[in-house]
Length: 74
Image (cartoon, rainbow, N blue to C red; front, side, top):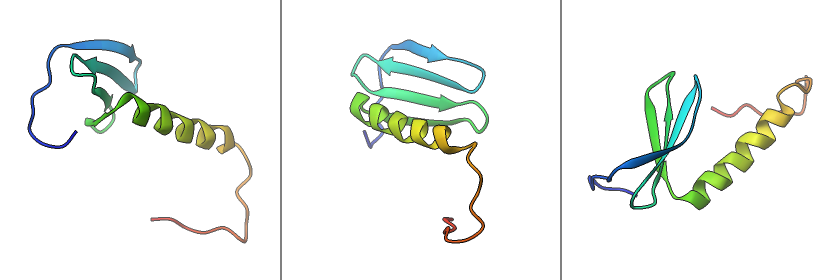
């Protein structure tokens, strides 16, 4: 997906107050996050894998934060 190749017309797949997901005629999926204006372009399989990671994190967000044995990731 790298390079300056212009994508074609987009079809909206989903949108809410935080994100808009569109698909280009070339098949590339564009995920735009409104809070910071960042758009990530990826393949449909990459979107599926990213969603699985986001879902796993969301499922664990309400768990208590351990006071030891954790690591900080910057």
